[in-house]
Structure formats: structure tokens, C-alpha cells
Length: 114
Image (cartoon, rainbow, N blue to C red; front, side):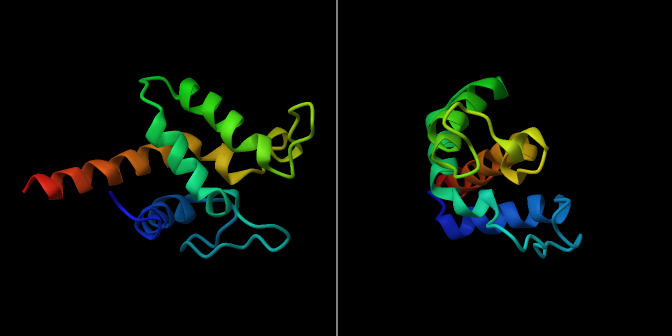
């Protein structure tokens, strides 16, 4: 199984380069808060590892339950101002995040099979 550092490297190579909060080369420009992808990486890995579905909806339901409920930007009633403003990188890029994590896992299984 890949390490958190390996997952983060794979995510940074894909997500951070596309993120509207970066300089286009992967350097994060968020100054007033921590990137949710980096902050919640262990929980994100748990969500992806424990969900097996062809629908992103199942992954998103687990994300809301296991990650968003612990985020300081979400209110007690489940409303998230960052998510509502499309300003949460985790929410904005979640389908791609799931894809990168699953591809990283597949590459690792392929290496072990050799």
C-alpha cells in the first residue's frame, strides 16, 4: 500500500497543477487557511479505501460523513460556506482526487504482482 507521502505526491502532481488556488505549476497560493486536501488526507484515504462504487455519489456521501463533519468551515446544520461558494478544493476536485488515489493503488498492486 502506498504511503501518505506517495499519495500526496500523486495528488499534488495532478490536482495542485489544475487547482484555481495554485500558480499553475502546483504551488499553493492559499494564504488564509490550510488546503482541505492536505489537511484531511488520512480521512480522504479512508473514505476512498472503504468505498467501492461506480458512482461518485457513494464516495461523496462518505466524504460528507467522515470529513466534512469535522471541518471548521461546516456549520452544525451541515452548511458549508466554502463548499457553497465552490471554494473548497476538496469538494471541487473530489472526483479527480478519487481517481488519482485509486490509480495510485492500482499502480502499487501492479508493482507487487511483478
